[in-house]
Image 1: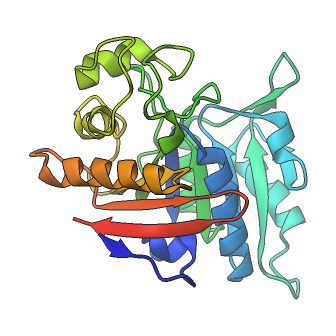
Image 2: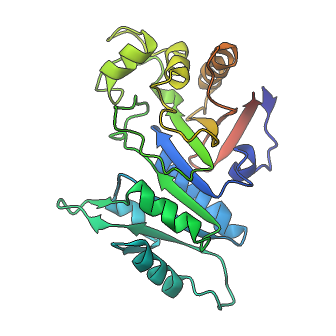
Length: 268
């Protein structure tokens, strides 16, 4: 693994310079990462669409221009109003969703086909898509219907919270614990290990399932904010590097709060 450049932005660390449609899945900070990336892209002068193919919490849209749309045409119309093409300031970001949930606390996203349609218009420099939920747990395993990844995705970022390692494998600590046990071979109740996380990433039905064949796959190990957690994160990367079916091209170790910090990067 290579130490990260202290001045390196997340875009560069994750290798997203040429990725236009970026999907995020997993747990332990993917929404935070999505908004961190949005801010970096906007600061670089780009126009960004933020959306989901599942649901996001309504309060996560606070402070951003957000709108509901029933079609790609409607979404583009709202985007033109909020991000006018003839203005001095070309950059900006908007959040688009299909409808507010019945509970009033969540926003339902778009079908992946609609996201593909929006990507094809080239109206946005970047589209960021949250592709699954995690019940606010640091780690998760995917069910058969997730993640929901648009076909035009250029890069998939798998997020995992290193702070979940060492906790007992249970639904209290990890979303879909029984699936994690089946994918990794780790018994329910056993401490969640770095090896089990690597196996859940590498498994064909694991955290990268459903990713388009030509999309880059990046693993972001978040919450690596202590020497012990960094050591655990490096172990995940080591196991993946030795795995015969490693699906990821890059592992990035760092943390997002109180501000983004990248510690190390491994490319395969």
